[in-house]
Structures are given as C-alpha cells and as structure tokens.
Image (cartoon, rainbow, N blue to C red; front, top):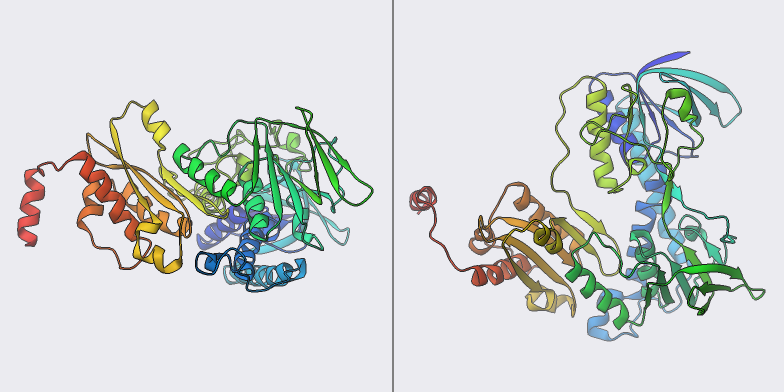
Length: 478
C-alpha cells in the first residue's frame, strides 16, 4: 500500500486546484481519475465543450454581425456537426496538455482507475488494465462531479433522444429540437442550437426559468429568445417521450399537446457521481441526488479527514467556485491557513445572449426590506454597442439608498460574463454609486454601460453631501 498526504478523487476544477495547492505546500499528492484523460466533466463534457461549441456556432453563423448585415448573413453557408467537432477536439487537447503539465510541474502523481473506499483513509483503485492497488491518505478530497440525470422512462438512444453529454457526439445538426428542462444547461444548449438556425422548443414544468437570476434580466432574456422564434413552454410537463420509425422523436405533454422534432435533449438535472465510491465503508452517505453534505466554510464532510468540493456538493456548481472550494478544502486538510469562501462571486450563463450576475437580485433586496434604487443601461446606448451592431443587452445595478453601496449587478447581452467582474470588484470592496459616476471608463467600450447605469441611479437617488473625511481627501488630491 502506498501512502499519501492528500488523495484527490477526480481531476475536474475542484480536484486539480485542490491537488496543486497541496503539492505547492510540500505534500505528497495523488489524483485518481477514472476517465481516459484528466480534466473531468469540466474539460470533456461540461464547461469547456459547451463554451467551445457556443463560440464556434457564433463564429460560423456570423451571429455577431447580423445586426449590420441582416438575419440571413452567414460566414459559412453549410455548417456541419464535423465543423463544430473539429474546433472542440483542438480545444480539449490543449486543455488536457496544460493540465498534465501542471501536474508534472508540481509533482502531483496521477493514477487512472476507478476508486472505491475500503475505510475512511484507504481507497482501492481498479486500473484500466485490470490491476488493483490500494492507497492510503491522511486526507481525501472527493471531487467526482456529476453526470446527467437519466430517468428510466426516457428512451435515450444517443441519436434522437440524448442527454447533454451525448449531444457533443452528434453526427449531424438537427433541423428541429425539443429541450426538456430550462435550467442552465438546457437553456445554454437550446440557445446555441437556435443560433445555428435549429427550430427549438423548450419545455419546463415550472412557470419560469433561472429563478436565481434577477427577474427583470430573465424577462429581457426571454423576450430576446421569443423574438427569434424560440418556443418557451413554461408550466408544462413532458410525460412521455417516444422514438419514431423515421428517426424523429415525439414528446407528449400533460396538457395533451404532442411535439415532434428531429432531436430531443433531456436536460432536467444532474446527479452526483458518488454511487460507485462505496461511501458507506468510509461512514458517508449521499442524498437522493448523489450529493454530499459539507461544511460550507471548509468543505469538510461529516468524516473529518474526508472533504468534498465542486458540483458534487450542489449549488452553485460553477467551475470557478469549484476551483476555490478545492483550494480551501486542500489548505484546511493539510493544516494550512485558509480564508472563507468569497461573499460575492459572479455567476455566468453562457447562453446566446450571455447572462452574468453578482450580488443581490432586486427580489432579494425587497425581501430584506432594504430601501434601494436601480440604474439601468442599454448596450445600444453606448458607442461601442453601435459599433458592434447591438440592438439588445442591458446592465442593471442596485444600490442601497441608505449607504449608497452597490448591492448587485446583473447583465444580459454580449460580453456579460466579462463585464460582470467590474461590478464584482466594487461589491467586494463595498463601493458606492459615486465610484461609477466619478470614474472614467475607456471609450468606446461596453464597460461604459457602468457609467450610464451609475448616472441613472445617481440621478434618481439625488446627490448627498459627502462625509467630512471624504471632502478632506478630495481637497488634498486636488
């Protein structure tokens, strides 16, 4: 049996960041990955592939130029699934090479195989060649990620009825598609295929989508989707899915409506990939979705030497937050100082158009009884927006009337996931509306929308006399 200071199961964002952090602290680290290559779900079926597919679709369709040249404008007239796959494979190869180099540079050992617990410190690893080895770790981090939820009544075949993992291997682009589930993954793929001129219908049993996003942003987003002829069927449940002899599929809704399409994407949730770990041997138990309960500050499970991070612990299930969770868990596990998870982190939805948000929504501000004011900027109001041909897109900021501090920033439109970081910094530094009013932004840029939205809120809030200390500081600066 080989002994390690820190063993990581899974090499996704949480696993790799946790492993490298422990190695940098001088610990002997092993990463166990059951996939054929390192990277986990994020690299091979999740974050990187979906974002690469999005970028490829926008480039080949000429989506960003249609504001000038019309909806019929296309960079490539006939786009095939192979066109999408070619760029995807190049990107994935690069990501794997970078990760393997990081492991080698930091002397992180890597083992390919399927891990199961023998006890709280011991794992048995069945390698790809059939060899079985046992490894012992002072601390263990479970970063196994998730896989698509596949109900038994859905007739998955990888062709006409697919989950989100199988979607990356399609051989031809569908002319029509039904997406079951309006969560982040379902909406991202629905809008990407809509940009590829596939006729898309989204079926969602709830009466809305993306409930954690500011409602005004969701309303603007929904309008943009419907404006390009996407069908959004809220409050309707898909009771049955059938494959047809002609290769198509039908979706039967509870209200009697029947939808027929070339392809059905089932994207109604994911489950933690914990069922093969033999958690009971380590004294652990997952919930009904395969997720593990952890201390939200240290990511320690109920078993003190075992940690969990990333999608397997549930919301927010972001690559960015997973990395930070893995790092915090690693430092705590090896006895190094650690900081609490950040209060405000950005949430990015890589749909077409993008959505990104940080801080409180307007609904949350109301629930807390905070007197507030909003400032809004439309991208078409900026010179950069005109240059880019943007007709849509908006930035919304929420400020406290009492402290004038920024409470939340919410963006829908081109570049939203990049723009949000300005608002994130001001939030974490407890900045006020005056920051946006008094500072200069590059011109012309979309970031200028912060100035416009700041002035919008400032005009509504009214100018107040600055505290004496601020006045003295301003006088010295002058």
